[in-house]
Length: 247
Image (cartoon, rainbow, N blue to C red):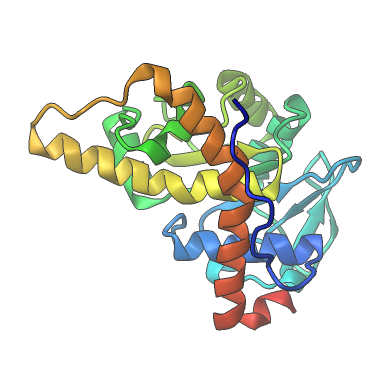
């Protein structure tokens, strides 16, 4: 039996450059709670390019506009942009170097993710939206300080392997995706999944489990049907509030 797919979906309503799409992603995730003050970075290595788009050091995610973005090469040298970038850029360069599927890499310290990271445990996936992380999430429990060199970035990338969602003990999260839409959707839902898991944990009760046989279908549906629709809706709402993000 054919799987239902929408024949037409609401568009963003305006054509966006890559820089504008990435700037919107920063603000969308900031509004979703996937940020901590000046912390965090998103890189986008577009198909066929060796360079990465990234946010500059010092701007909060909720104030970034398209013209603020920097471009770095794979050795973390800034080749375009008004400002410098974080030394933790090596978290990204080495993942991009090893993972052709990880076109977008998102890192920050969302609060509920950090609660689980401080407990040294992955969230139990108890709600259907959480199924998008099934068999795609790893915990790296040993905190080794800032990743500020290529060697440390390479070591972390090797430990991550093929996972798209990484909880870093005493630190935060890394989320990857093949497109900006999929990575943004995956990141936007992560903190809620962690908050829900922790709240259920506090009850001391045994939660209902999602039947194992239904999880793959729900996961595929969420990622395949949800990513672009989530991103378009989030951008539409953002542009109504903060059109200056495109400047």
